Image 1: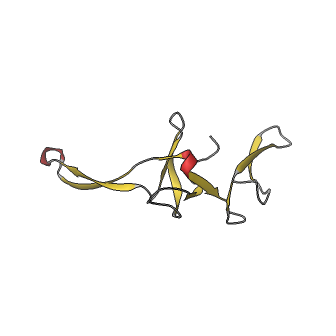
Image 2: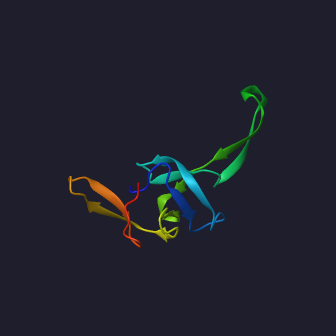
Length: 100
């Protein structure tokens, strides 16, 4: 998966369509990401568990989000290029600039 913690992403589908946020957690095996402030639901807990209403952020599928490039500030796909030292570098497909 090419998305990393700290990347800014924009939601493409669903009730949160158009919202942007920063990735807090990546679940590789299920291909899901947890985005800060998006897909937040309120969960009512019982008194024996401390009680009250707790807000919980649920993960989104990777196919529902797209990366926002920090250089060109547009949503773009991520490409991989091989650097001179042989390491893979993530790049923006629109502006061809390397991502951090």
